[in-house]
Length: 108
Image (cartoon, rainbow, N blue to C red):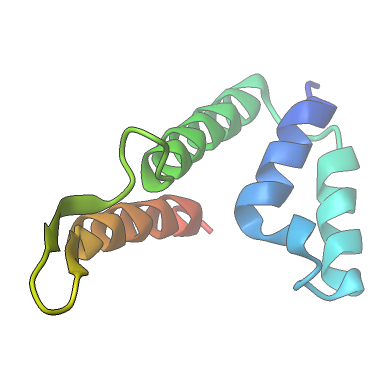
């Protein structure tokens, strides 16, 4: 019977929050036992990898990079005092983060 590769196990731990050490050690031991079990059919492993890929995609979409800084517009106002006015796309970022949380909560 197949099992998830070590890399896939690490991806699963990342998406479940096990890499942040916010999960009790006993829970991590249980998860490691699940990973070590060889009782899973090929379909289960393929399904798990499919879910991990979905989580990776939504995680990548929830991150901002140099091209998508989250700023909708910026203007500099000058006069007696100089200041800038920045509007952020917080709603869009929140929607992307919500989609990621939804994927990580799927099917458990």
